[in-house]
Amino acid sequence: VQLVESGGGLVQAGGSLRLSCAASGRTSSTYLMGWFRQAPGKEREFVAGIRWSGGMTSYADSVKGRFTISRDNAKNMVYLQMNSLKPEDTAVYYCALQIRRGTPYDYWGQGTQVTVSS
Image (tube, rainbow, N blue to C red; front, side, top):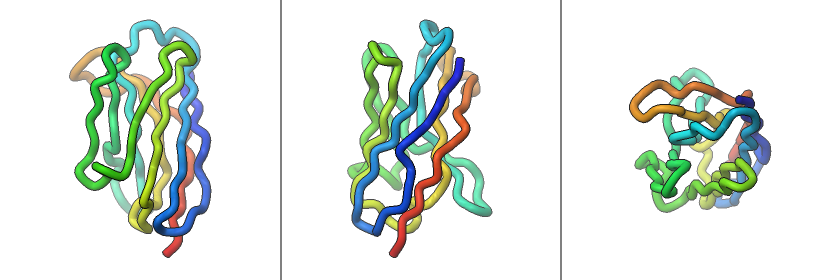
């Protein structure tokens, strides 16, 4: 399985960005896909997740109401719509895929940089 993120960039505070993650390879066993982020000097943190079947979503408290995760099963794509961006959202954003519920994520993308200027 390969995951490739795109859509990062530089945006002013209050602006929006849409991240995309393209999954390829043997993705038929996917249980969950998620977005994580890692800011300089900080640990990687969970941002949002979506079940591949059914579409149930979950979000970190810090992004609830501002970010929306969605998927397109036919295209093997996951998206993260980010609105009302804040400087503290600046990080490298990673897409990840989980095969079994409750296990560590199995595959990760290379990341895409999001920078929010004040």
